[in-house]
Image 1 (cartoon, one colour):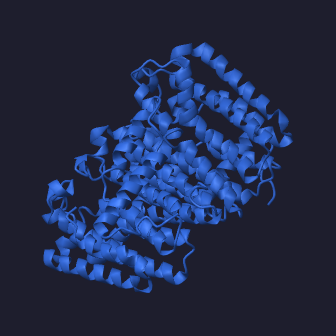
Image 2 (cartoon, chains in turn green, brown):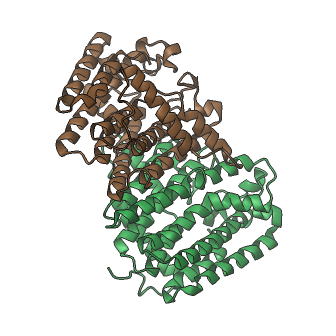
Image 3 (cartoon, chains in turn brown, orange):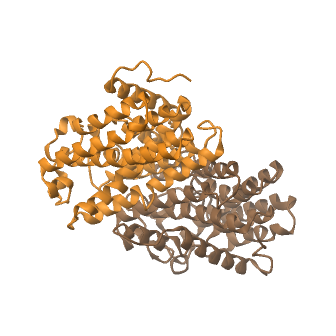
Length: 301
Length: 301
């Protein structure tokens, strides 16, 4: 299939295209609400939309580098966003970060209820694995297994879930830069890395290309998180679509609380530049991945 | 590898062997608690033990029918129990069934805390898929993908999660026998069916064998659930290891509330007999599967 980003002029348009692709694909993948269990499906549909689709974007762009078929790659990108949606739903729960707002709307447990939100998150996780293992995603079952394994490792106790555990444990303790960096590598970095690797898996990329994408994802993910911490201090809740000032209120150690705003901003810029540098081995097809490095540090939401 | 059940005399001994196999395998599969994220791993280890291991038993016995390698089958059985553990942890949460006791001990959210319990359940789910997709489970990636897909469908919004949603929605409503039957086919039946199918998938069983196992699992699962409802009315909480009388207290429609105790007991027996009948196409290797039909209706826990 043709490259859907071929005639797209700039990053902003590319992100819009990604949003549309994601919306259509998720609409196909999430079952239709029907029967007495429809409430959990309605909650999934509610939570699936309205995000930045950054992880889907990274997956789709990574696939483009290696000429991966668009339809399969859209399914992988959607599965990654299913996992992201699950993590947001569960993280927002009262027992976790207790966030009533997300993406400018009530969080899923506020819009529905806690039980439904827990179940919707659970269902998103299994849906992601179902999509990865399905032969519509890739004809080669080795590749599908590699996707399942890669995703599972990225989000398990030594990945995303471990990072969220560290985050909860760390709220009252004094973390240093090393500990915070590790926390975010697990909590948000591991899934971002998997998104960036997913195109390489689908396209049987060389070891060199995989290493470059890994280094790119590592620096981009950290830059993203430093900016997240900055936005929690100085962001506009109306644009951000979620509560701000939560980290300071809970006495949580963040990049900003340790480094101060100015140094944190410099650090984010440095990381974004480093991230861009890792893409030097790729050709013009990495254009939007290069541009996203700037987007990540300039973003207001 | 040799058949570990070969010299086992009766069902009770076979269940004990299963428990040991499961314990060893899960000890290998769950990471060691280490680092600041160890709390979630400790919670997983806590929740992984002390159950009846019925689903693992069904998986291992199903594998035996088709001469499946024991080590791979033990991994599949453990993955099924990981999913079962995740579902119990989440179902026991205050926002769900609010059960403080499980397997004779405090539920995971009581022993640890709600956030850790949510994360431990989440991590169990991804661990299950990681195990299924790993090449240590089966050399053929088609088979591994079939395991992932089958498990994902069994536990998603049109499976286990959908059943739990129906259960929560139905607490205040009047369900009839048809609706309750469907609820339990999703909530507990789908995972039990998958456990019974898993050996057939691993052993590339014939369509006929798969149909027989499916019918067996369907009747056994329902018998199991009718007995669950009976135990909630007349079981001994000390043996059962969990609270009793919850269904009546919450005004929940159950097989017992609709049919009465006596008819429910007859129905369970009938279903167990039917389940046994579906095994007629198998040889002596189905011995313990036949015996488990009796166990399920006589069990006290």
